[in-house]
Length: 65
Image (spheres, rainbow, N blue to C red):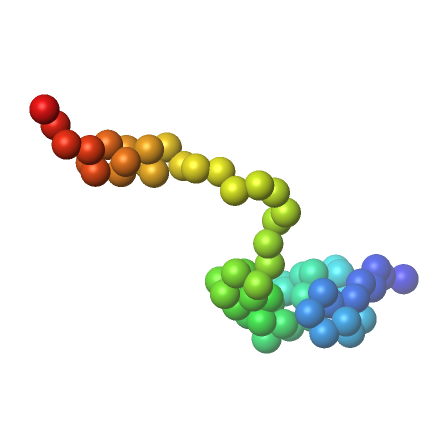
């Protein structure tokens, strides 16, 4: 008996073994998920941080004497 999992996108059961799209059931479901990431629909909770590049930009705004 082979392992069957539910597709994270459409929730259909699909084979795990020999499935080139796993954990998804198809290329379509895989692309739907990728689109969600590119549109920033998925987020990892946490506090916003300031990147080191933002600090360098602040230096450009100050006058040099």
